Image (cartoon, rainbow, N blue to C red; front, top):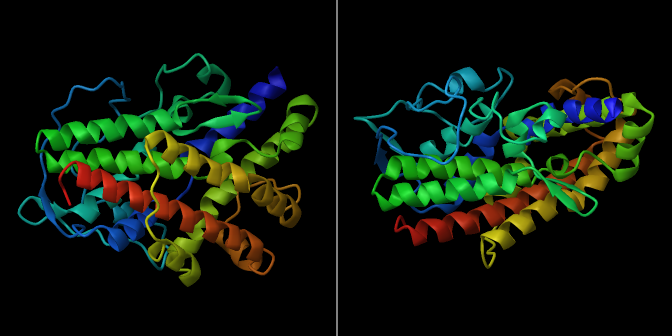
Length: 321
């Protein structure tokens, strides 16, 4: 039991953040598919009664457009979204979706009592940000988080509050992006997970570092403006699901379907990994990571298509396009 708790505690720190560079991924998707991306919306105050509780010390309710990117993007990044200051209290649709797609990772779900299972994973934020599938069982609330913020967005648009309609929608986008990440759907390949649980604590730490590292690998590709990966996002065509549940299932399958290959590459190229990899490590191993890049491009192309289809259909439904 102690080894089990140690493993899941380590993994909880990785799954909280899922993909890095939410803002850049969202920007590329939104600017390449929404006909109203440049429409201006008036900033409005928060005025909602929610069913969820948050860490109010970490919850951001004021507008931070124009002040976010400069403090968030790493110094080595060559490409990232612009973040202009509001003009006459208004900001474009793309900026609200871009900036606030990061918001769920800034601490609003930390330090809460959300589930009896959080005593095992050691982090309430992970309860809302991941959706593990182990054998025949699903754990945690990542998909429910997506559906929750879709409904909050509908509520805001129904009140003609376009700013909070898009801001809640940005949070929904974040959680859907989380669900496409392979390690966000399972800790690793089943054999190694069992090994880490039964006799090899170091294996559990290695699995966690693989997860941390794959989080940052997407950021590395996007921030350094990898043309192939960016093209896979921008040029993807909208893909439709019949309903929200099917959309969630298809996105999760992207992660689950590619987990074994991603994990195999990390275990081969970085055997015995004992730290999170940096962009310098990725640069030095670029030749060995060609397959990983191809897999990541595939995930991004497929996921971006589903996200575009969802956004176009949802915004049509609420009368925005």
